[in-house]
Length: 141
Image (cartoon, rainbow, N blue to C red; front, side, top):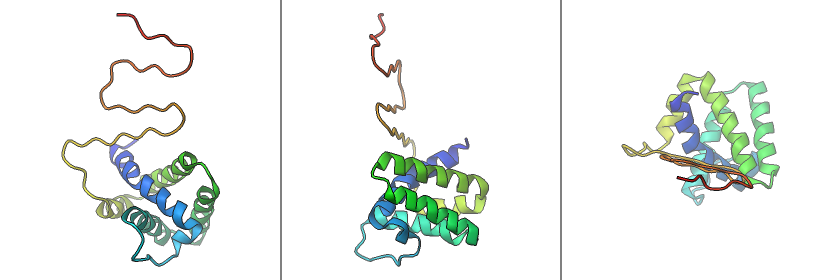
């Protein structure tokens, strides 16, 4: 997958999840509340950007997916659903990538974002050996 899309989803996904958790499906049409915190406000802007760029059928699908994520009690699941939605939208629309990038803070030079989601997930920039799961012994030198 394109590294730019992975980076954008990594930055935008948590904000979108926070907005959906706070407002549910209403996040798509709700006027931003000045009192909303920065993450929820950013997530709302991201989802409304997707909303504005879609036709009626696309908006219905977006509303369904956001509603599903809002109803889910598992934040990791909601994050995965919204990240998939963002990846597909960004893959199909280079202009959307530019618009989303303009909303997000520019990563500091040399900064690497690594996200691990789900039970027993690991994330690392540099790693020698990573063994996950039950019943494994550490490797012997």
